[in-house]
Length: 312
Image 1: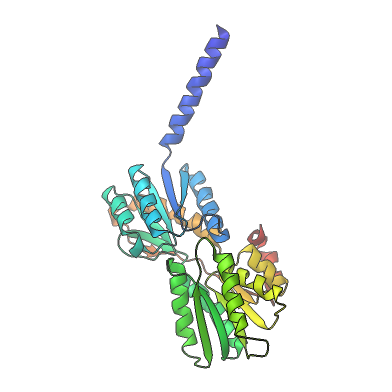
Image 2 (image 1 turned 90 degrees about the vertical axis):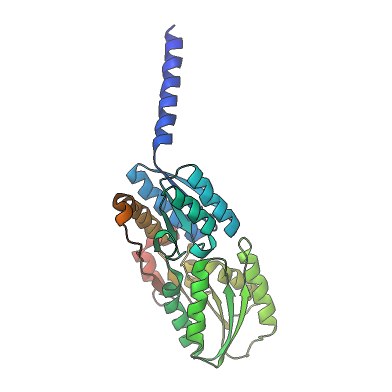
């Protein structure tokens, strides 16, 4: 009898726990690439903030597909999510998802997806973050030479970074730019293959040479090609400051990156969602950016002392 009562009590407690978990407000996160280092840091920050607020988090990896992102946002709307976070997809490409969320009064915020339509807030905007790296690269090249730019136009962040690149390079007509767009997934491989093709037409001694990735990973893929060919005459630049990029800077294989504190961006955005919900119809859309940090050979060791979490 006691064992039966114990089993019944255990079942009741499990059921109560399941109900309690279901009752926690749901924050739906739609990531362009959940396993990419910067995305993963943002998600961890968002999860920490959600746990402090007593909310639960569910992540859907859209694998670089705007169609999958729209379907994911619609899925969260059907599940009556408390709020939805769009990671990198521009607001203009998730219209169907935004409409589904708006119909249920579910706030949607973006990480690098920009403000527009019914988006309540954004951070992680791409253009300003890339400017210090691009300016350093142009200075290191002496304002002339050849540049391989590894781009990605499905994500708003990389679109804006490419615009920043174009605007700055336009002031230096002696720089010739070759652009290749990488895929998600496949950015490491594409970076390496495009670098191989570009290097074939840019031998040693062919002037000032540089490779730029609109985020670190394609540039890291290119580093593999440079090392396999023994090329140390090409400068390499990225954006985001993931652990691999920082290690490549320490080892002399990469020249600079802009460290994006994506953990803090994710944390801050979820905390802001409470403000959005509390304000209701009085909320005014806004950008809440976290400044990037330029990391180079000269300051990488001090940076890592100041930010040990960057390589954890």
